[in-house]
Length: 237
Image (cartoon, rainbow, N blue to C red; front, side, top):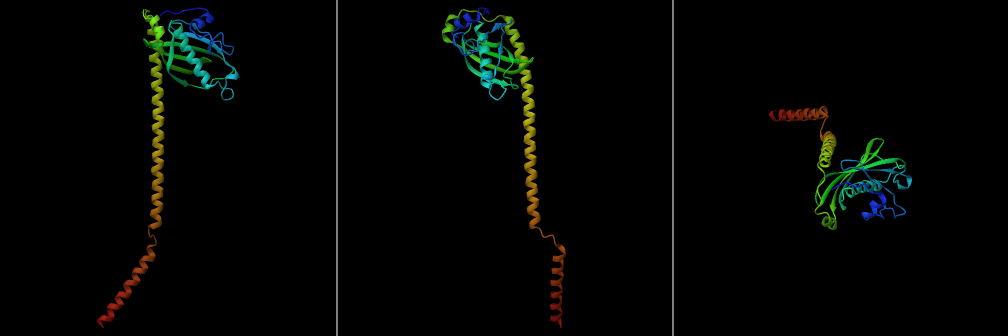
């Protein structure tokens, strides 16, 4: 598969996306996204967010963010001559995305074995990744028939994708370990609190049922012993 650099309108039309809500030129409500190749199998686009797409006040809607990421990965495949549909999409919202700023969107291929493709996309604001997604795409059957004799991606694309994938996997593993440690610490705190509450309740019940007035009991015992001795003295008389 080789990257293409055709006119965006012609490009969307050729890929049956003329009426797409995100990139279609024939849809009056389209966001008019245009993706351009950026080298080594990556595509990029600029998107100006606006308040009409917000969820919470001042924040870009999560559904819009997911759609932007999905569109970026779809167009990444378009630029490689592949038409595919999304089979699985995992989105991570790293931090709130303002609803009135210019955003950079980029996507690239992580790996593939036809007809399955795995990609990653990111949304960048102020030089920080504010949201990212990974997805699996399935090539459409008709397109597979058309492209059954096509060649695989160039080696440099896969090498670059592999490096990015390894780095992201390492970061993800570190984040997962931190979350696991925090979860375990929380469970230990809950357990200690539960045991402490049980001990307090136990000692409270114990204190109510235990006779602590030893002087009173001692006096009763002395009185009983005196009466017993007097009775014994009368018997011997």
